[in-house]
Length: 370
Image (cartoon, rainbow, N blue to C red; front, side, top):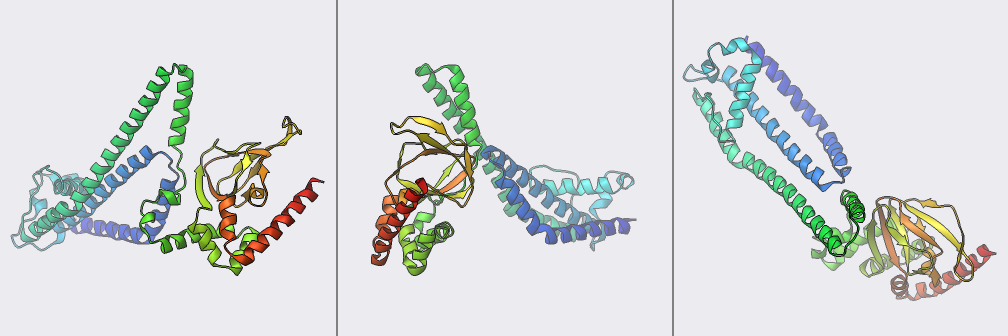
């Protein structure tokens, strides 16, 4: 009977090991995708705590299976096994009671808890010592990580509560209506739960890199977007150093926006062009008369990822004729017109082509407006 039970446990452990090896990479990808979809930092911290708890339970399950196998099949030099000293008649309760007893024993190896199960031979005592050593190192680390995640979650909630209280106090001093505070609190809560894309300025270790390596990394990040513009693609192909010059200067900046953020407004001076690196933009064209009075508005359009927006600012002095708002979480590569033209003018051959391209672009706009 004991042999049949041991066979079933070994078969189960073998199946679990096969599933672990074959699905580990897939589960890791699914887990990462699931975590990326969670916007709330509090929820992510809570899920990290839950994941650590599952890790602790799973490792104790492995130790419990090993402890049970030793109690059933391992050699004994005393003729005694820990299973022989369970509660009287415990064998009548079946495999579930014996497994739970083994799991209970494994949990006591990493906690101050105790139970009646103790080693009864050299093999069991050796395994017990190894589990205690493992508990000192590995389980101690898991418990520390669990405590750190819990403390981080508590600090995050306390920090948000203090800042929200500060906002409430400010509005009370300024005698702002309570309805407006409720509206502001709702919007702040929604924006806190939005997960923005990671930008270069958010990476703490990026400034520690050498200027050469940092410029190379930024060049690779910007290359796919800049090459979508025919004029820039042509000149970068002829002068590969141009890409490093642009990325190493102040012409290009990544920026993140959430739904409702205004990118630019009508009648504002156009000083930047925008490449939509992720997300989408809602753009509404406003038609005004010579006095600047709005006559009518065109239907709103949605501009998707990969498109350029307000690129006319690179070649002409321009005033925005419409309003652009982020339709959701949006990442933009902002191109500052003056800095771009200055960096490109450092190359004599490009300087001449800049003038020609600007004239051709102006003729194109004049022809389109006819």
